[in-house]
Image (cartoon, rainbow, N blue to C red):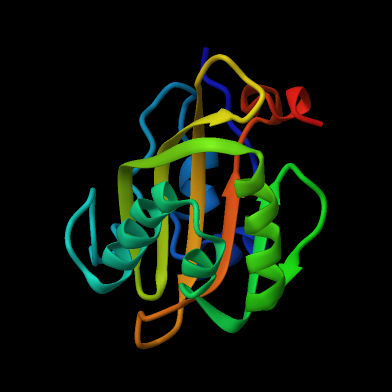
Length: 177
């Protein structure tokens, strides 16, 4: 069965301007035909490849095993932001970030952050990792998959933004509240 879709030309122009294929090309083909390949982006990093952005993220993740909020806060610019999604709120400023990290550390026996893959582009690093930790009142480890997005200063020396995305249920956070 050949299904054809008609699309107004204004939409074709919008998609072309965004670097994609024209909607007319997609809409006029039969369902099931492969779509043209997406345009490639320049590579500026890769899975744990050394580079100024990924190297800072690697050092930051390694520092977590020290459970030292002041050491961790030193990775941030003075006006940086930190957000743990799905938890509400954004923490702003190095001092406030240090306080938030101290609260997290206070309930941990130990932790390790293991980067699985990290990619960078310009001053942004996206890292998939597994955070392994044990709460102070727990008898087992938690292994939490996380995606972290880090934005860095132009000199790659500090974070201007850190956002972690994780499943709250897998974190077992409710067991320590």
